[in-house]
Image (cartoon, rainbow, N blue to C red; front, side):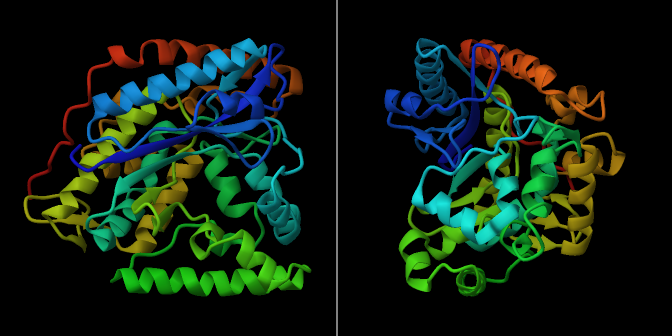
Length: 367
């Protein structure tokens, strides 16, 4: 990893019985712990770091603080893509309240999803946007929950719900966007999407002036890949919340690929990393493969073959959703037990976060 990379990891808050509960007071323990969209959800962040070792140290520091603060309150933290059963808490912020009014029933998906956001230093933004779009199937490496609102859904229930359960009017703001030829084209898409979002809001009784006070164009689009103007970074939002060690490994693997865009063009063609280029598939083919990865995880051979072409060692990842989907439905009692199990796994994972060997550089496939 040569580009600076930052991690944002969302975590559910539970009490000693495994019930979801508020965690805003935990955020007071560290400047890089933030309350999220609903009360039982927090986000922990690293600073931008230029090595996997530095990312591990930073994440271990922030998460260790968060875990200790939670335990002092009789609470635990859980790294799952969904809370397994439904969260229906009201959104505590003005922005959250507006999302509820604008999205209506579609806001249920946002309230029941926890993800990982990776921020890569912006150097070749067009190539970075297109490559991160093409890496969407890599979300299967860390899919952590097959359940959405109590029912078995897909291997990444979060990705499916976030992109598809928000309602047809809002899918364009949450689904994967196609490749672009320039930053100007991307920014024009964002601006046009914001205009449409403002019009939808007006239909639901929220004035354009209020929308503009609460949102920026880039904040209104929640797609798996975003170009951040203020940081400046290219943000990859495809993966579920997962164990920190796997999140850091994924950040290192993806960061190594993103760094190659400084030297090699990203071209549509035969997918994989070559001496003189990084190849990505036609977008329609990618979109179909991404849907397979969301639905079935790493099980389908085309998903594994595709990821291996980019140097991912699929066998080095252990996506939790592969092991959680035994029954068609999950009861509230079982969900509490599962959350407690994953809280224990998180604590053990953080305790060993600095003992893990850094990932080797992504393997390069010869042309």
